[in-house]
Image (cartoon, rainbow, N blue to C red; front, side, top):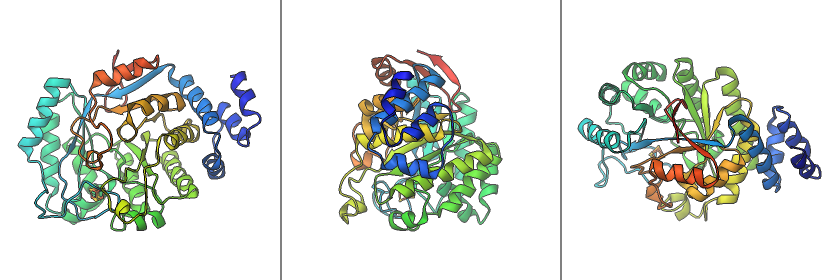
Length: 372
Ligand code: SF4
């Protein structure tokens, strides 16, 4: 620790890093200063020190598949290469039997512990579709957890049903929904959302729906998609809003910062964004997230899906403690052509072992399933 203290002494963010090492919490201004600083490696030293203090040289992962159950969507986000409008010849929606077949294969081949179930905003699917899927999975594959639906998908179902989001969440919990992935947050600042996803729910609705879920006893992750039109203060505001929600509810299990993948998106075509954010920015986001959230949100994911396994190994050194999921069958990021989007549990274990860490397989709720 004294070696780290010496190195950070001459930095312009010295006070924030020292406070972090002493376990103090940070405000929005601290976050902006971290985001504006180029001392990313020092932040990483501190982020890595904090995470090892909590978990030692261990990193967890979940054996899971992602079921992108439909690509039909009416929300037309400019950052999305995945969706197709209703009636498009490339549109699809998985039937109950198709979902069952995929879960069965994944269970038999990989002994998965989680299905991550996400898709477009499909106005033709009513709540019974989701209830049937969740009941089927929990009945036929009781060891497989259901981590499903963004806040905006919940909002879409509520609109289809002419019901409240709270009622939808309550019914889906009853049917077997166990946790929310926290997707659809992007950046929780409406001036950003108005540019990248003008038809999506505003920030206040995302926060309200996740709060409703947490109050119903459905734990959630929180996400951030960075690397597009957001400013430093937008990111700081996003992290601040997540921190406030967690202070109120305490149910956020993990934070996941994703980098925007521009390939095949409208934003790239319109030259709103010219390239992805890259690995250095990932490390900055990981270190800052650990420093900002260390006292309040237990887990931080490495985001291998958009940045690759090598960067995820570095992210573990900079403050992440969870590799994320195997995500076999992922479609959304695959549509941008971003790197490899399939990774078996063994490959994740190897990647964790390569950096001298012990791999811990976890379940949907971050409970240990097996230490490898
Ligand atoms: S990100 Fe989701 S809501 Fe937006 S267009 Fe793609 S599928 Fe639809």
